[in-house]
Image (tube, rainbow, N blue to C red):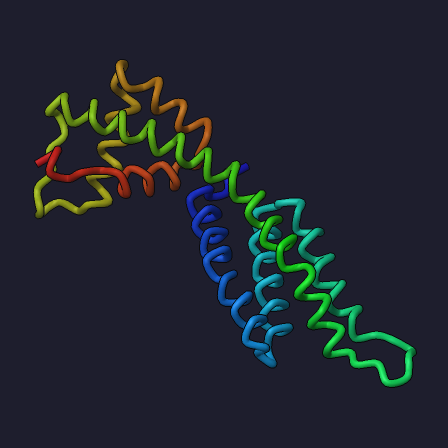
Length: 185
């Protein structure tokens, strides 16, 4: 089974959390589309969870169900829209907390891998065996550095550790993110 991209998951979840203050502001400004914006935010968080087989998908779906149920009542003079606003407002904290609690362990793992990658790149640069020139394709160079790390007996342990924690694609993205090309020029 291919590992899902931690790199992409972390960035998607961070993006969701960065959108959250806008939803709170729409509540504060009594935006008539507050419920729709909250619902849309929940739906997109739910899709990210679903695509990554994260079980909290059901919790997010439950929040959406609460908002939908807020429309339904047999009472005379019942204002479904006002009730939905109240329900959506009351679940805001728990919804963002659910996303945050999913993000934190993945972000921690990525940060650990980022540290290992930085160390491996410093050690690789010190060997003076890998040289980059502007004519080279950057992606090919990154791949070559990764192969070097895996084939070097002194660096291999770190490479294997990264492979145990991330997909090959994530490792390449991380190396590309962390490499200081002037160390290899």
